[in-house]
Amino acid sequence: AQKITQTQPGMFVQEKEAVTLDCTYDTSDPSYGLFWYKQPSSGEMIFLIYQGSYDQQNATEGRYSLNFQKARKSANLVISASQLGDSAMYFCAMREGDRMTTDSWGKLQFGAGTQVVVTP
Amino acid sequence: EPEVTQTPSHQVTQMGQEVILRCVPISNHLYFYWYRQILGQKVEFLVSFYNNEISEKSEIFDDQFSVERPDGSNFTLKIRSTKLEDSAMYFCASSLLGGTGDTQYFGPGTRLTVL
Image (tube, rainbow over all chains, first blue to last red; front, side):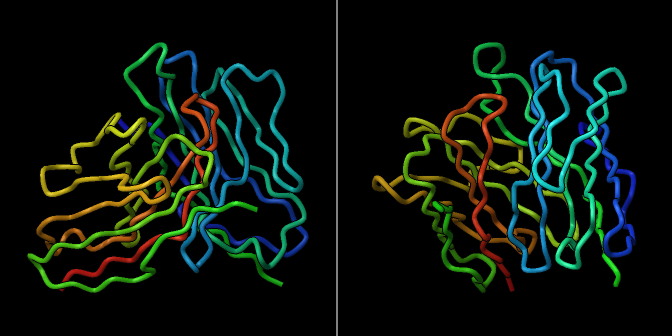
């Protein structure tokens, strides 16, 4: 079974508009972390935002915010006021458990990604 | 701002040859990782490394792969006998701690092309 599902292969958004990228996850571990990374066409992976399973509030980092709905197991990324430089592939990733409770040493499991194209 | 670096940025090799991909993690980080991304596909975990030994590895990380931290700064991935299907972008990442919420910072990647 897929651990991370990103159902939107691609999205177009106009400059200055907001865009929501969907991410659902599957885990039975009560302790987990959710991450979003941006991959521009140059190929590097840039960390954007993190949400912990025990966090009471939705994470925000500048123009990025995370809509965390724990009961629905979703962690959607919202990019506000899109800019041309936001055009990139966006990956949702999960890290389950910690070494006190599992054998996991913190590997990230990634979704298939969503390609975002921002148009003028 | 400290960053993870990787060399080379692009490596072309013949099938059956050995390659070594190099990474310099962020200096005070303790956990190191290799991931790979075959063109157009998702990023896949290969191996994690802590305290000079492998902590966890995936099914992809078979006997052809090995990792080493030869000195206090470098972290290498060796592929002993490359196959066509090893062609991918290889990312090194590091994190300060190993906790669930600890962010992994990625290097720019090495694009490996096996001919």
